[in-house]
Length: 359
Image 1: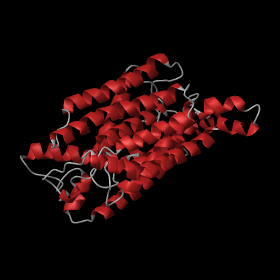
Image 2: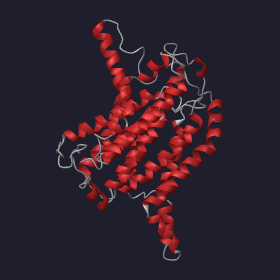
Image 3: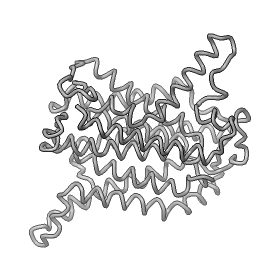
Image 4: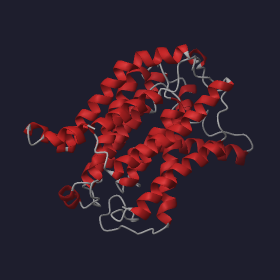
C-alpha cells in the first residue's frame, strides 16, 4: 500500500525512491509486525480471556494442567500483524506475494475451525483428521496448480543440496511432491507446538533462513553467482518472510515460558503451511528438512513410536511422543528443552545456508 501510494510522488520527493528497494521494505515490514504484535498483544490476550477461549489440556502425558485455560488461538494475532504489514509494505501486484498470503490464510482458516470446535466442545476433538487433511491439500493444490500451470517462469525441476549440476525435472509429479512438502511441514509444526515457545522459535529461525534463499533466488546476479535457480520477481516474498519473522518474535514475547498465550492450530498450521510453500517457491524443498530439522525429528519420533507400538504389541521406543514430551518425562525442565531446541534450530539453519557454497 505504501509502495503503490507513495512511489507515485517519487518524482516530487526523491527520498521516496527508497521504497523500490526490497531490503528497505523488508526491514520495515519486520518492524511493523513486531511492534504491532507487542503493542496489541496484551489487549488481544485480555479479549481472549473475556471470550473464555482457553486451551484444553489432555489428562495423559506430562502434567500441564496448570496451563489449562491459557488463552489460545494466538495465531490470529500473528496473522493480523503479518497481513497488515504485507499490505503496507508489499507490492500487491506480485503473484508470488499474493500466493503466500493465500496459503497462509487458507491454512490458518483450517486451523481456526479446528481450534474453534475444540473450545466449543470443551474437549480436544476439533474437526476430523480427514477433514483437516482435505482442507490442507485443497489449499496447497490451488496454490501449486497456479504456479505450475499459469506461471511460465516456474519450473518443475528439483534442486539437490550439495550438487549444482543435478536438477531432475519431475514433470507433473512435482505437483504431488510439492503438496506433500507443504502439508507435511504444516502438520510437523503443529506436532511441535507442545511447549511454550517451542514451535514459534524454530519456525522463526527456519523462515529467516528461507528468506535468504528467497532473496538470492530472485536476484539474477546473486543467483548466477551461487548457481541456484533464478526466478524473476521472487525477491518480493522477502517482505512476507520479514513480516512473519517480526510477528513471530512479537508473539514469542508473550508465548515464552511461562506462556501467556498459545498460538493454537490457527497459528501452527498457517506458519507451517506457508513455510513449506516458501521452500517450494525458492526451489529449496530438500533444504527445508535441514533448516527445519527440529520439526523433522519431532515428526519422525511420532511415526516411529506409533509404528513400533503396533508392531511390538504395545512397547514404546520413547517414553512419549513427540520427542519433547520424552525429555519432559525424563525430568528435563521445560525451559531447558525449549532453549536447547532453539539452539539446535540455529545450528541446522547455518548448515542449510552453508549448502550455498558447498556445491
